[in-house]
Length: 281
Ligand code: 13P
Image (cartoon, rainbow, N blue to C red; front, side, top):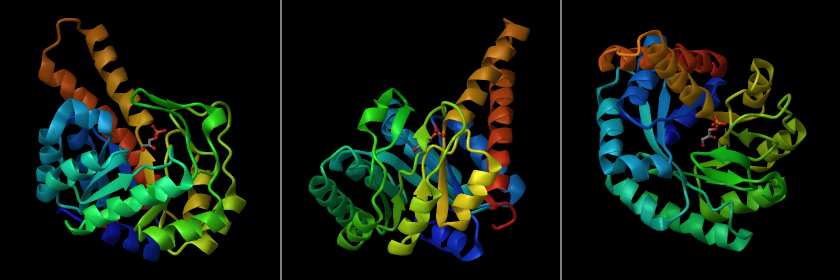
């Protein structure tokens, strides 16, 4: 069933677990995410990055919405990392249940104004809004932020930002990165605790691929209610296609796609268990 971001995150916060948000590009991704969630009786979030939206257009969002409606568990449909009001408008009109207004590349005052505009647009559709303060380094779908341009979330500024925008969730930058971690991931848990003290809304951690179980558990205990996962699922998809083609170069398409769905579903299921959301739907 289609669910809102706000309801999923409120339940996660009350229940001491987090909801996984998985980037999808096509039908196989959607099947993998919902298949894992249904098998584990877990709520889940399907999210579409603007690069994937540029590729799939509103039919991709319609696919997500239809699959969410048919699912046996609560599924939210979320626009990830939107940097323009026009992308937010397009996605809301296509029926997403929430958007991420990503003004993290902007100066603070401009991020505030952009996020306020996103909240006004979303409210007209009854949709939720996630925003980001601080800036994440790393790469996702061709968009890169170098380490020198990244900066960590300031707890006092985060409190002011959340109060000034009315967002439903805040993505934090505490050492997390998009893509692959170089060496052991290190998260600034003291900063996360301070943000949690200062900010009343559920917190979001991007770049959850490659985070070990202990860090995930600690982050949940310190207020993270949504983890974003892309790289590991995408890698499983590509590896399954590559291995399938290597094993049988003239393989039929459908068995190859089914193999890819199974590989992605296994990764998603692992994450749902780590996030503690299995059995919560
Ligand atoms: P990873 O690709 O590092 O898992 O990050 C995904 C993400 O944060 C999407 O917004």
